[in-house]
Amino acid sequence: MSRDVSGRPLCGMFVDMVSKGFSRFTRLRPCLLQNKTGCSYVRRAFTIRPLDGVRVLDLTRVLAGPFATMILGDLGAEVTKVERPGLGDDTRTWGPPFVGEESAYFLSVNRNKKSIAVNLKDPKGAKLVKELARISDVLVENYLPGKLDEMGLGYKQLSEVAPQLIYCSITGYGQTGPQSHKPGYDSIASAASGMMHITGPEDGEPVRPGVAMTDLATGLYAQGAVMAGLLQRQKTGRGVHIDCNLLSSQVACLSHIAANYLNAGKEARRWGTAHESIVPYQGFRTKDGYLVVAAVQINTNTLIHLHIPNPLHIIYFKYNMMFSEEPTAEWLRRFEGTGVPCGPINTVQQVFSNPQVAHNGLIMEMDHPTSGRIAVPGPAVRFSSFECDRPTPPPVIGQHTIEVLRDTLGYSDDVINQLLASHTVTQNVVH
Image (tube, rainbow, N blue to C red; front, side):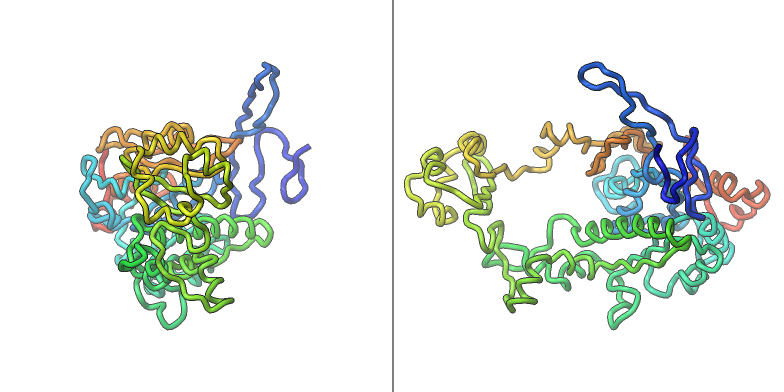
């Protein structure tokens, strides 16, 4: 018989979420599957998502924080995004392109969330958010250190009324230290962490990565830390404060580049698409595009198969025009079966034309209340026990304000109307 972390058997159709913060119950639905031989068996006893029943209060904006909370939402958490009335998340205006009135940027990292528009500078607004924190499992924020303390929403203040709270702070440089007062931006953190120094052509200037990798890495670290905090709470019954920041995330991701310096004093440099230790392990221009060859090991038979007459050409691939003599598809055909890893350098259009991308569920479509049918990148991870196949679209600013105040906090209509009249909160009516 299956048992929970306390050793109790899992009985009936309900399971106690164990820790004090998981006092709510979640219904579990059995699912009967069949194997290829037609023999029925219960492979997924329950289709509960990992974070069903977990409430997340999202006080983040831009990318790192929203990316983290979106992943938590993908895993089943009930995410309530707190936004500024009238303005909302900064990225709502980051375009073009826009899909209807929403920027594609905002749409990309805000699915599976509700939005409430609250003026945190109004004491009544801060009080409202404090009440939400009291009944939440997780709070994620990316304010400058000390800003939320000024509003009565810092970790120490909230932990007194919500000791179960996993409070995750995302900043540029950390909660303490000589640079902790500085705001965090992906490009600046990427530069300060050395990432930009090692990115770009060999003889060229430092280059910003084409996507905000520092923000995204920080979001992944934050999401993982929140999950660890929830697991720790099952053991201790108490929440925790998580200090997550852009600088630490990117420096930690320097990996072997950092180890090369720390252990051998070796300063890194830019290699373009090449590898500092392996040749060939880089991109090459073909007749109609680009190709990456990652030949960690290569032998004479492989050279013959590829019609490469001289082994020295392997070392000097970069300096000749051999790859430019044939289109990418022909080189992929020649490399097939040789044991030499290779692949095309795809445009974004080619990426989403790749049947493997579609097969992996990386194109997620949904109906947005004002933008119509939209498509965004889907979750990178899939589970055997459930599917992320019922996403809710990114919300309009304040789309769920009244719903959350009434259904989650139990406010009366009179109180809600007073908050609306004083502009402490706003509601965006969506038809």
